[in-house]
Amino acid sequence: MNATLEIPAGYRQDGNGRLIPEAMIKPIDLTRDALVIELVNEAKKANDVLREFKLGAAADIEAFVDLSLEQYQTKVGGKKGNITLFSFDGKLKIQIAIAEHIAFDERLQAAKSLIDECITSWAQGSSPEIQTLVQDAFQTDKEGKISTGRVLALRRLDISDDKWQMAMKAISESVQVVGSKEYIRFYERVGNTEKYQPINLDFAAV
Image (cartoon, rainbow, N blue to C red; front, side, top):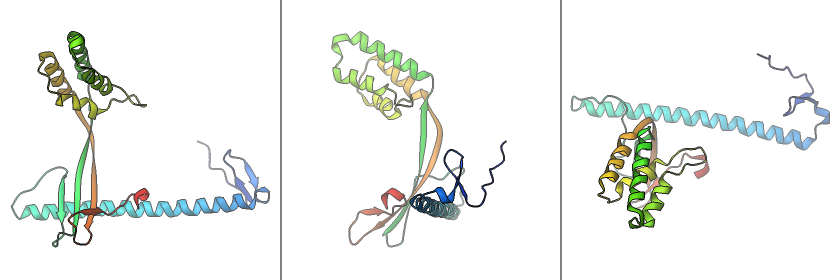
């Protein structure tokens, strides 16, 4: 492993790893460098504060749910998700949701084969709309992934064909939960309206 290069006083290291005397660097480039370093360091501090807040909020909510469940001499194991908490006056609310990430196993290929057989056997009898839906459902994105939403939407089509139904069963059985993510969202009701406005913690939405 290479040791970290020690930069001599009066020099700066450029993007190619070269040592450049500060006297040869334009003042505007030095000013830009200082601005970027300052703002990125501030962003890191803000990120740390936000992370600590999220972890603390999640722990506080979990402790409250446990306290509430103790009133009924019961306890829930595992992650606690899909909960909404309201302030006493109903003007504030917190939503906790667990979003599951799903993927398909090899049985999806069997489903695709059965669906292709259906389309072929129906020939002229199948509507162009259904054919388009099927083609769109199994298209991959730039990363080579199939849209789980479009594939699962095929199950809502009202088609009684036995082979089609077998394909829909294969799709259902091919679904695998490969991970989950917890979301905590905060809302407030402004004025006398019934609508809740989100308290944005997303930098781009503030």
